[in-house]
Length: 518
Image (cartoon, rainbow, N blue to C red; front, side, top):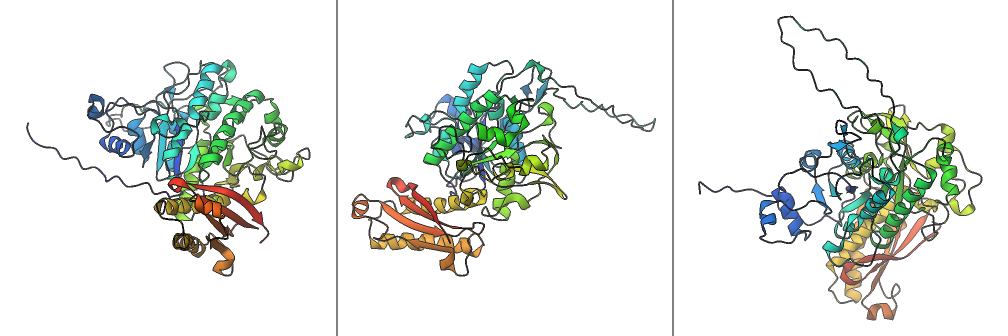
């Protein structure tokens, strides 16, 4: 033994559940053939994702990193772990980026600071058929079976059961998995000749720079029937979030439509024809909910060029912008004021009529007076560069249409959950009720001071009540603590009244959610 080597590891901090800037990317990218870094292995063991043992695999760091959440704090850390840029497109000589890798890259490029990445394996092969793609879609968003007692029973999206920091869920591979690769998707790519470069005769020329890979494939496009597959997965994901993680928002890119399809002719009309925006999640086909934020169109980024047609689904870009917005301005503010970085172009380019036109055939339950820009978070050019032109959810309730409203409610729920976990073993009674009321009041006072809530006086902006008027005797006997919270979000036109129920284990649920005129 020649000596001792001391390896300093960062202390394992508890999850900061009040953060509103952390995204979770769930998709497919091959891991690199390296030993698991010690800090990642320690975190996975500390949080219970891996068992702490002395097996050969655990000692050598050769455990699988698939289907477990990995905390990622910068782009270099992700690049160290994943072969995200070695995906084979077609033949082995055509190498590019995976959609998961591209989304994480854009997240950090647009201002994100921390995310979790869950890779479920290698990306889909272009030759994989419908059955193989459907199996991968079930990996992304499994059918909920009620099994959630142990981390080993969680897969894909369901890992959010154990990630209280996460505010945004992103599924970058979804559009490609919903569609099928078609032989006619090869597109001609004009590569301009290199500019002449003159050097002194006495000066040796440097080795020629490796030519940049050009992937002459079209981006994935969905037929009308493939949109139904995409919608089914989106609905399954938002339903699970609505049931179990109401403080999380799903960010999803609308797939590009196949040329000559109904969706290509009129996207908003197609969404209404498919009943995507009719009613709410209780309706069989609807994806109209405050927990879903759609992004469109697809983006061409200056730092990319390694994806088919150089087009990137915009949800990773939007996740980074929303993270930057939360860190610098407050999650309760709209992100439309922030400039997107390194955007070259968007596809397809939407006309004013496409953005602002109404669909007179839309039923009353689908907000017929709402144009596409009010149902989808559109990205487009402005005089000073590319911005999010709208920061909206798909909800039919106008009070929840603005996405920053739902983010504000999510922040209140996170605070309530933390308080509930702290007092979970306290006896229910006037003393506990007053403590909860005071603690939540402090949180709302801080939000009011920062502009998240509006009102001439604090009592106009928020109210908290936790006493016998909010609970029945049966609730008290069963150990349920119910808090009535009224908030007046700064961006809303109406007051929202929220009822938070703190149950066993500090779990917080929205047992009732209503609105009344301010």
